[in-house]
Length: 93
Image 1 (cartoon, one colour):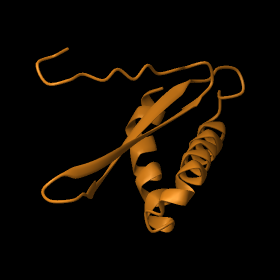
Image 2 (cartoon, rainbow, N blue to C red):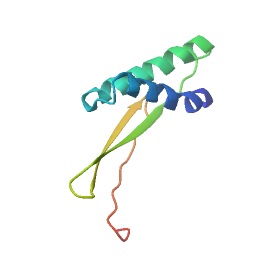
Image 3 (tube, rainbow, N blue to C red):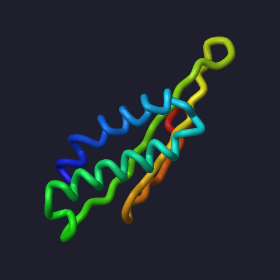
Image 4 (tube, one colour):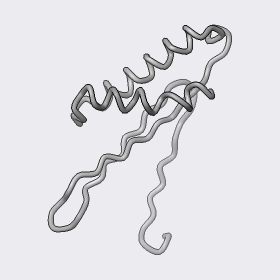
């Protein structure tokens, strides 16, 4: 887990750069980043006997009309990990 925590974000960012941050390639980015880290863990040994699960979130922001910001949140997971996304209105409702 420590290796994944220390390295996955860099791999993910490199894969985003490789696709020029194309929104239609986001699933590919998640898939490739998980495959790369899995291969690296195998190379370190021990990954055949134990493993890790992972949930990754990516917030993509683009300028909207006026001064607004359009945001899209992407979530990917591997293993038996899952994420819950909870929205809040102004005032914490």
